[in-house]
Image (cartoon, rainbow, N blue to C red):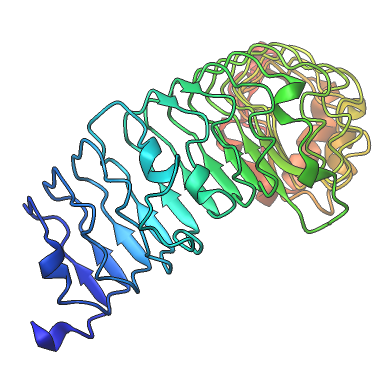
Length: 390
């Protein structure tokens, strides 16, 4: 195997490998990438990776391990990305691997370059306090999706001040501890979609010190779709001054208050689709002058007026499909004709009387901007039922 000593990448994925030894890997001291994914590994020796002092990317996903030794990554000071998706059989978070005290033999620079840590598709139940103490201030991306998590301890993310992207999708989280994200000073995206959240509190997102910085380049996305959130208190997102994207689609709230978006002047994308909203307060979006994408589809709105969208002069995409609208003030469309790229009015019970004539005329002048035009049809009066507006 001497001729492979300069090998940079070794892929042994998708086989029936049941064990790998340190002696074998010692033949490849120049490896940057090692892929052992989708095998039948049940146990990994603690010193397995020690010959690979240049290792940058390690893929172990798709195996079935009870645990990993806490010294597995010791002295791998160039380690950049670790994929441990669908690895652990035990319903216990590997706290000793990333938290707790480092083994004595570990170099102090271990994990110093780690940027991506993937721990999705496991079965952890609980993420304990200080779960990532040994890699604090290091990772750029932390993925914990689809891991059966139903509880986050209050200090689960303690010290993770450099994490920019946190993914908690597809778990069973029903409650967030107060100030759970407070240690994560560099966050740019949090996704907690498809969980069991029932409520949100101002304490969950405030104070977040980084978002009070006057840095126009800072952008933040908060994706909370497919939960069971039934109410949204005023100012719940006030601690995120650089919030540019907010998704609350597929929840169960029936109303939104006038002050909900009082501090969201950076918001560009807002998704409130597929909830139970029956009415919007007038001027609800007036403090969102940067809003360019708005999805209100799949609710029970029967009125949308010019005042609802007052001061929203940058709107390029508007989706109000699948509501209960029978009429629409044409000025909503006419005053934005020059910048509006896409509008979806389909699936509403439109009353094709004279009052809707200006909307009918606008749609026929701008057919390229009308989405799902074949499903935008008259419901009343009876003689026009089923007639396409465009």
